[in-house]
Image 1 (cartoon, rainbow, N blue to C red):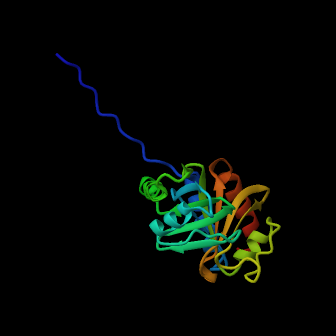
Image 2: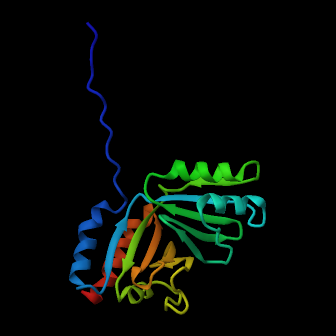
Image 3: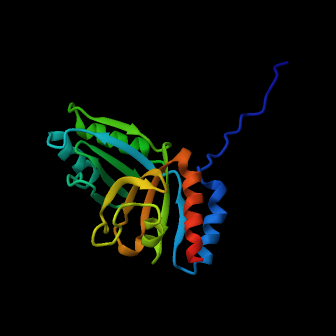
Length: 203
């Protein structure tokens, strides 16, 4: 008689900051609207490298329904897709969870025979949302950038450090939308602790 074994169960993925969700929510409530802290887990993140002056750049932009940003440290958004300038020939595509293969296929198909590199780095980083009227002040505790809206307003991004941690900082497309802080998963817990500690001033 053949032996049967129960079908293997697939564990649900855990975000790098799932253990900190309650503390982030508690700090948000305690601040009475001054700040909001939350993780945006599992966002699709693809690094794309190609010649910004080549035919592929325009074709890829058309396939994504936007123009790849060419000005340093700027952001372009179309629908659920956000594209960050990271270098003269490098961009980070950030989209809704689960669309990695779709986005990669669109980029590669649009590029055709032109040289292009597309790397799925979704598991490399997680994203923290920092918003609210005191978001600038909170981040300024550990970031050397001038975060005033005149200097780092909507549509800007930068590779910088926050609390001695390397991050990609994004000013969202509306002043009240706050910031995305993209941080490597291995440093996410440390950065969340740093933010919670810095936020005690506002709770």
